[in-house]
Image 1 (cartoon, rainbow, N blue to C red):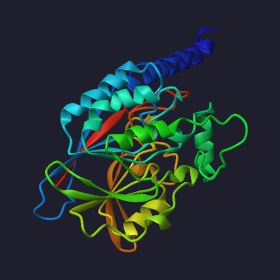
Image 2 (cartoon, rainbow, N blue to C red):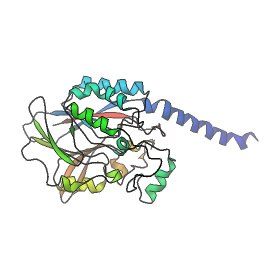
Image 3 (cartoon, rainbow, N blue to C red):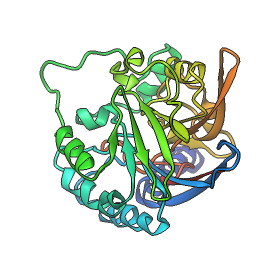
Image 4 (cartoon, rainbow, N blue to C red):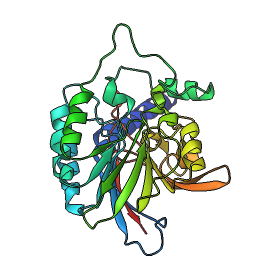
Length: 307
């Protein structure tokens, strides 16, 4: 009798312990990654970019707010926000409080689907099923009808713009760094909900700048192909949460888009039409409020040093 019930009980206890660790410890174990990218033209001084993504702020997340505020001590040359700031329509003031010290630096941003729409509960197992079917979360599904929560994303946009950050929703822009370098910026609205309009920004990097960056929230292959074919040297994205729930010594099971799991987070490359771009995908520093767990994939921000 003891053997009959001992194994299921042990599995249950181990599973509960993993969930408690994933939600209670690792999801709040914030860290900074440092990455060097050898991508600048010869003779340029190094440029330090702080990339934040997938904050998914929920009211009351004080530790996350304090940690994000502390990143201003890095004094980056540029702050890049690759979207999904919200996981609670009431959390805009807390996002702005967290980012306030960083908004003193030059910055740029794109939005993700969770900036526009509030989260809904979904069975996490559905992501595995949808990936097997070639589907990816909300991609291609129409938002509308009953039960849709629309976030006050305009308040975020207005605050970012007032701070001088450059918004890049299917648009181009420039930012001048404190040391005088002028960067060309090109960004897309979120491909995960098919808001990207590459034809609005096509044509390649701005030739009258010192360096060019491309930004997008979700790293779908159609977008990476387009940016790379247009010869952008560096593409920054988020969305994947690094897989969020990973298998130790194996890695991510899903990316929540059509990017392969080998490139779910960190620095890699992407090749299209004979040209290769660097790609950096942030694992993000938050999670959907209904799945507030991370396993073998702690929340993070990244300081990229371009050399």
